[in-house]
Image (tube, rainbow, N blue to C red):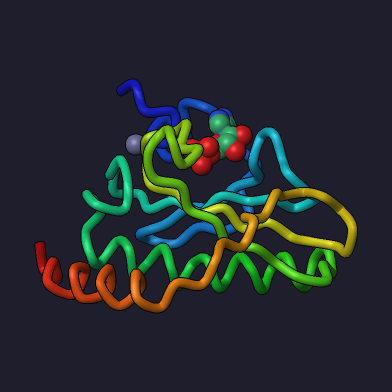
Length: 137
Ligand code: AMP
Ligand code: ZN
């Protein structure tokens, strides 16, 4: 087994568990962006969003809400970011689907946000139509 998160699920590698149910596990990120930064993972191995089963996706989403509530109660953040990376270009480094739950405080600089681009309704209309045509692909 060469997947580090599968090894955490199996108990071969220690983790600081914050939540577990039949289908999911959540633990503190080893290099946290902020205090309480946790990752929520399905117990089913899937590399990313594209290969994850709908049931595991739903279970992970539900567990993400639970973990967000645990963090709200435990570290009292002013806000929480949910982040999920797919592919190296998007910052994915562990190829077992996971959701980051990142507590935020004003001015903490824990995450960089995108620079808002220009509004181009004509281009958006074309792109949205093209994307709708790809539904179910
Ligand atoms: P990503 O870059 O979205 O793939 O996120 C992977 C995350 O897993 C990173 O934030 C790492 O710090 C975290 N990570 C890697 N190994 C471990 C580990 N053994 N225990 C806890 N978190 C880990
Ligand atoms: Zn895995």
